[in-house]
Image 1: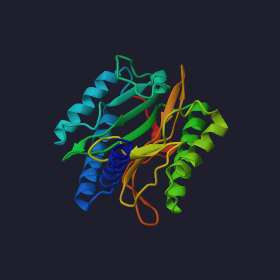
Image 2: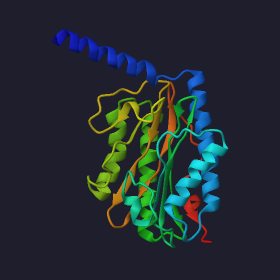
Image 3: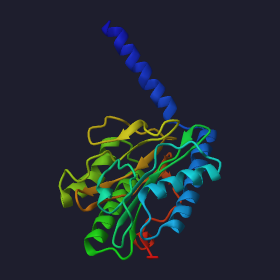
Image 4: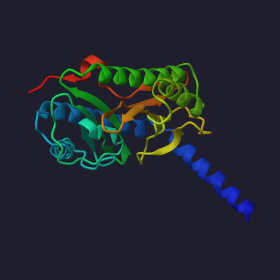
Length: 253
């Protein structure tokens, strides 16, 4: 019985590893889904205004995906304003956008069953000093992880460690409570995973998310997420949206 269990576990690992490495056609579908998501993000940014609700923006996202021929989403959109951004898996509600709010948008769509995934955080008006610092630190954690991958590191826990260690040192171990990222394919969360205790080795040809975040209950949260392709000696960023602080600050209207 134990032998059969080990055989099944080995078979499951093999299936995961085969699925993780994307063919050119599979990668093309993921990139196409991401480009559609980027167009939808552009639509959303044009429609943001003081007083608009999270649910109104969520509905706009869904309608925009239909407009661009990708009606099947990777997951239900996360739209959060203000203190709601501290909720990692926030479900949009009637909260209204107001001056000084953090805005978190996390969504993706599918093309021929292959998913995209992206998170961007914005500020409705000039952010305060604390908001700027949190954003810059999350972005630096992302850059550290990508630099590690760019130097050839493929051990998932070591990639997670460089980003997590940076944020934990500044904010404590409880403010970044989720994994650094995950594989993307025909499902939105696929093997392998960037986690502190992960034993995964990331294969060449795998599409991964890098998504560090910090969350402060009653205040708000910041998360930035890109999708990357693991290449032989480095990586290729599949997300084509600016994420420097300057481009996150939106003009009030």
